[in-house]
Length: 381
Image (cartoon, rainbow, N blue to C red; front, side, top):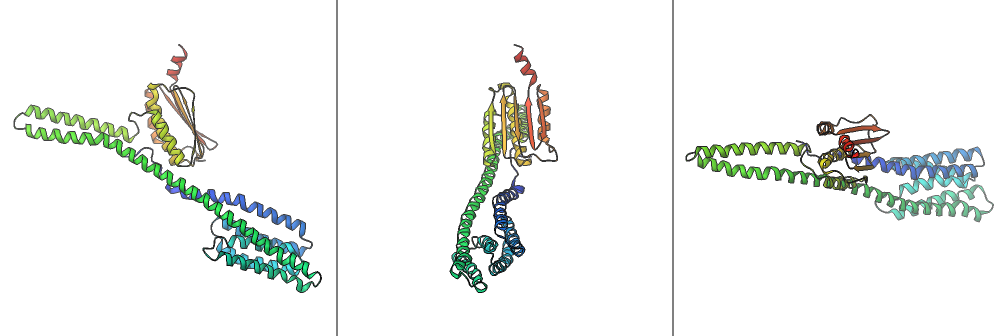
């Protein structure tokens, strides 16, 4: 037996969250850093040697940034720190004040994630930048004060500022990760609520029946010696009651129990929103009561399929008098999956004069149910 509306997203949700966060980090971090590095290269490099050392430092810094977005940067950041320190030393000795850029980036990525002693580490990085930059005065003895400001004080201050911004960025991305995890927990809670709702429906169907069966069987046992015909009648009622319960249980298992479309719509909205999916509902008119139950079954089954098979971010539900259309993004590129639940519903709709359309185009999945015969009769009035 399969519980309807249970979203089995746990197998891919965590990976999907990490992928989205990494893409966000890549877009907001690496291109701006590369752009600034190229600008410094274009406007400050005066010799081919300056070009070489700035490119080496920039590559090391961008490699650290890329690994930072993947959450695996420590093993890259430490060698990159050594490389960019050597680059800055070479730049200071060759009169290239922009070559500290790579070292400042690597340090700003390395320090904020430290579990403790981040302030001393930041101070040590600033001192390292200043000391390496101060080596410029060893080979250039003119304008010592100006050179110390240009190669020691300004780069050290820039490192402090860039790392301070990185502390803020680290907190921002931590908040995004917490938000995504919160959405995942909400989706799991929605699954639990759906299981509880299903358990309640199952209890309503079987709990009362089993209690009645127990009483009737006990009564039949007492009547076996005194009134066989009455005992036989009681057992016949038991058999009929059990048969009805089996039918109701099957209907519940396959979402064919009588449904309230408004309740199903509210339930679907809650499930989608809990899973972090934006929902839009358009009501072109009030749904005809004669088809509301079948349309509710289509909505329930489609909601289950979206949560199971799609990585949707948006869902649009359109209700008309004789139909419903559900469109979601995030559909698989290899075509629509095999959806046995919708296949069974298609037969029920056809038996009642309806039709079901299922299609996937450009990553968008459409599920639409309608009753054209009913619409034609209304238009002809």
